[in-house]
Image (cartoon, rainbow, N blue to C red; front, side, top):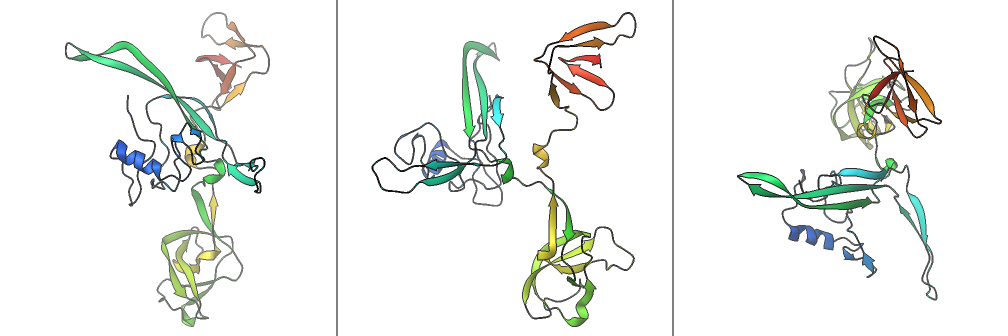
Length: 291
């Protein structure tokens, strides 16, 4: 069984693994919400907090601490509001907190081994345990990858790619094509416009240029809009894995045969089926049937 700490340590460009149990406990003790076994309110707390205050790498993800299988999960679209009332008889105003109802429950099975004749053999003693990951980020915390960048605004000035940090009148190429897609070139930079005002400018090129378009030009970054996917690619269903559809009532399917009589099979109400787009075939319990 492979064991991992749930997150990696930050503090640099690249994440690194937790070096020791002592380091891990020290990081948990720095969490403001409390840790295992006592929470910040000094009452029983049966878990640990992993927040942006703990020194974890910001680009990392929460990982399963061991090999296992997902038993249940929920990915909520948005956080929910929870109102905490002050203790009875004590002054104070209600506090509204926004928390995520998303979770993932993972089941782990550990099986001890012993060496027999130079080979590792499983022993009879096993341990099944569960880990519950609560309040993981909702869908609205993730943004999909930009599909393209589009120019917005009317009459937005564009400037030569060879212009200096201080734009001059002769550097102006005209105005940008509103709604046109562009390709970003390098990182944005701070430059002075013709009114001697500092703005962030981005070097771009038209994704689909016309004959009279400049090959590259500067445009104010505020007029570049990112058009993103609804969800990140890792959150979207894989195309080669068909979606499952529940069967609303007891049904029958006819199994195809190259030779001989077709076989009729019952399909209970509780079944789920997946339909492929290549041909009108339904898959159920790893058997193939014609509709």
